[in-house]
Length: 168
Image (cartoon, rainbow, N blue to C red; front, side):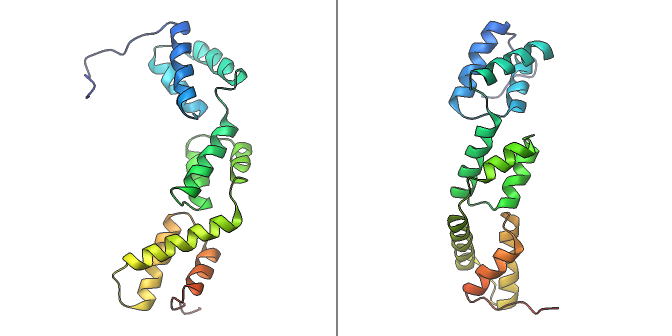
């Protein structure tokens, strides 16, 4: 279960590594960065890893645009993340702007807003704060952390009947 720090990782030939990494990519969508790190852990040098990555891309086992689309679908539908958080995570994973834009097209506006309302309602049920203004602020802060945009948060909280904050 725990890796022995004294044990050196197994070294693979490029052919063996290709078979292992193809299975790794077939299991779920991967980023080029993840695949490169995995290949380096197999003991391959940069050139060998690069050749394998090119081959995987040609054979459509590695496709960052497809990764971005799957990531967006999963994180906005199941984890109910907002656009800002999804974009931030994709950038952290080293995904290109083009692939991020392509992935973000997977978001349906109606479903996205409905997710925001559901998350806000759930947080409202869980929130113990009694002061309505503080309660609204806490819910808004939570929704901001989930990556939702301020204007949508304000609309959703107004619809839920939460006491609006004083306008400065």
